[in-house]
Image (cartoon, rainbow, N blue to C red; front, side, top):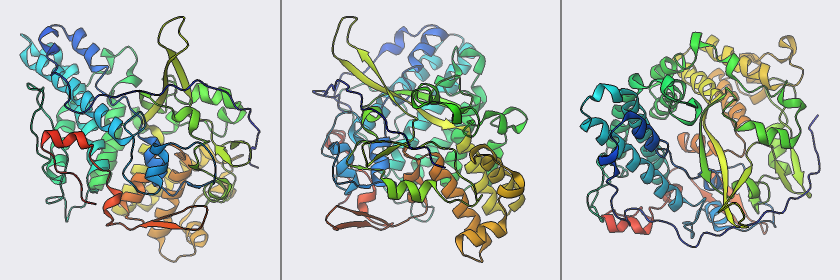
Amino acid sequence: MKNFTRVSLISLGLLTMSSCSKYLDQSPDSTWTELNTPQKVSQLLGTAYPQANYIVFAEAMSDNVTDKGAGVIERTNEDPYFFNDVNDIKEDSPEWYWTACYKAIAACNNALKACENAPDSSRYRAQKGEALVARAYAHFMLVNFFSKFYNAATAATDPGIPYVIEPETVVFEQYNRGTVAEVYDKIEKDLLAGIPLINDEKYEVPHYHFNKSAAHAFATRFYLFKKDYAKVVEFANKTFPNNDLASYMRPWNTTYRTMTPSMLWETYARATEKCNLLLVETQSTYGRNLARYRFGLDNNIETSVLSKNVAGGNYSYPIYYYGTRDYFVPKLTEYFVKASVNATIGDPYVMVPLFTTEEVLFNRAEANLYLGNTADVLSDLNLFASKRIVNYDAGRHAVSVAKAQTFYNTSNSNNALLNTILDFKRAEFLQEGHRWFDLQRYGVTITHYDIYGNKTTVAADDNRRVLQLPLSAQTAGLALNPR
């Protein structure tokens, strides 16, 4: 039975940012010259992660949302829904995310320069490893949003994004986009060079940095997108000690099931939750608006995603709502940071899990499917079901090939299992932005309707599926994406 609970609206102060930094629109940072200890480099690397939220526009482009007819109107939510270029540069916009990624990359490059110039570079091994993997991650996210999605047949000619590997030395540096294939090659080079150097013992709170598990999780996503399935399985099996995913999964059908919404909000993105392999603090209003955006989750989509499933039981995710149309699962919430102790203004933030145990499980299951390892696929799917189905009973709820074929009305076992993986994954990451990447990977045509019945349809090859580069990027000599 779904858990429908009426939740009182909480009034929150809204801070509108009057401006934001533009990519390459400020003096270059030369602070690496002062980074003369490993500890100082580690401190800089605390800023080596994009402190911006991509969920708003990623979710709005997906099939998890519809026009509810009323609600909070924000360009960062409305424009992506209709696949228009986002006419906003504040938090939660593509341009804000672009800028945050390149700021993170700048921090990585300054850290790497400090490691390279240190008298004893061996003392900086762990810092170098984190910087390389973090640099790879920021570029990876950029290329998957602002370039055509990776396709081996076209990646060598599809325009990529600038892969920046040196600290900027002039205010307006000129860059070229290269190709998607070149960007992916550089990501892989940084990733594979950085992973062996990471040392979890150097972190006070490993979940805020690319620890070993998070780096391996990133590798599973990278190789899944690249369709190198053997590598996905290899890195998934390295993610946890003794390959024990079960001990690191969210306890949705046990501990979480007894929690109130406020307890879930407080718990979901905590560093103490073992499932959260990497967390990042993002300046964002998503926590206050996610259920109330006009273009969001409604009852029909919620029912489609969270009602029936292959296992034949009820999902344990609790669904709540504001009013009669604003539905949400209590996961990500806002915390407000005042400008000073006595101030009444400040900035809204949302802590976002960038990598979790569950994603590793799904990536491995999908890779094993293409490798023909059906038994391993079923093992992971049943592990997931055992943690998500209310009153799980293996005798009644076990996932099998035959069960999946019946559920999806197909005789093709691979299609049945793939649909099971993607539907489980969609339910798990509802309102977290992951669905967009799956729609991109499989080139699923997306149709959005407005309340008047008008529709916007984008097929796999539609240029509007690629986010537009910020206009400020033209200063750096970059050609904008075609429209």
